[in-house]
Image (tube, rainbow, N blue to C red; front, side, top):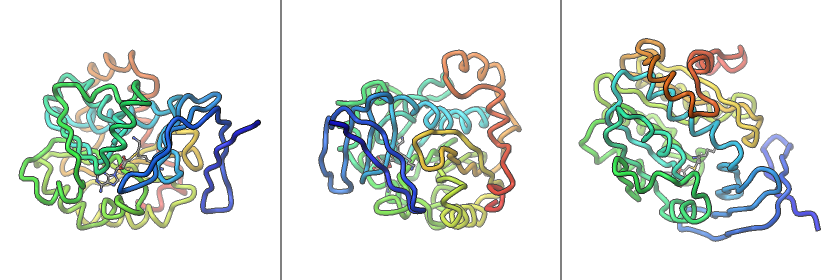
Length: 277
Ligand code: AAT
């Protein structure tokens, strides 16, 4: 029997993946969680029936959400991740020798637990001594936290349910306050083909708070449209003010997506994508 998973998009289109079997299916207090074994893309993590990652292509998302802000900052010693329960972003952040501490605040402990159990190559940094995991709402954490960070990465689900507030101006103000004077924030920012409305609100909210706001792209085959964007918001540095070229060259040998050319090239945007900036 042929088993297919289909993710339906809002614009009367869909994408399907041939599945071998379901490895886990359950419900946390926040969302439905499924882990599937696919024929050709390894394991797949779904939250509320949306694809969060495939083992085959997660590198294109996690390398890009982590290494772009970390290499844009001259000395990113303290990093905060909001969301990112599968551990892929944390795995990339702790690769940087300059990072001394990485706090990760994920609302759903079950995403972490199930990722450790079923996605060990993604959830591989939870034992790293530089990483402090907190199970809490990122909105609450950022409001109450008195610490400041060099880089904050928002690796969140789409702006529905628990992640809705992570796209609001009020939240970005708190993020601004949680960053040092030269801090940088990066957030997953949906896709320019289908979600212009979400993006317009998100970038307007960011521009009301941060002096420097731009967007960069990665290509992730099993996210809607394949083209995925990230918001880059900074208090002081433009992305190309302080590139640590020798560090990039050292690290890029071990990576599958990010390299020095991508660091500069990913900020080049097609005209239709620029309209939200
Ligand atoms: N690493 C790629 C996978 C994700 S999952 C995003 C995570 O954000 C989920 O584990 C979810 O539980 C967490 N999250 C949602 N809201 C909050 C919140 N308020 N505080 C802390 N964590 C939160 C991202 C995939 C992007 C998908 C693009 N379509």
